[in-house]
Image (cartoon, rainbow, N blue to C red):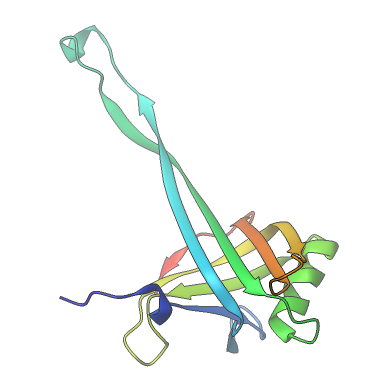
Amino acid sequence: MAVKVGLEGVAYINEGTFGSPSWAVIELTKDAAMNLEKTLADLSSRASGGWRWKKSALKDFKLDLQMVYDGADTAQALIAAAFLADTTVDLMILDDAVGSGGSGFRAQFEVASYNKSEPLEEGQMLDCSFELAYGSTPTVV
């Protein structure tokens, strides 16, 4: 059994091109939440004998990252630039580091939200939500 704790997870951002990636760890990630859901089409009919018959329809992929804010951080600058320019970011979320047997997903994402908090007695934090981009199909890594 290969149980993991959240601390072992790694978020990466591609600083290269999609075809020739240059993966950089998003070092200041505090918390990450990967949410994959799907809708189910109701295909019930009189032939279903009084039961609801369901079939997979559309899938949804949402990623939330909370990061300690650093105005000089390259990954955070790429995320901010993508948000402002309405472009995408190529992210890979793994349960362990590349080269250490990590597995997870890679996809192109739209930056759906970019929120910075400045609590009085805590570190400044950046909360970003990412949604699957047009034309992107997630791949299992």
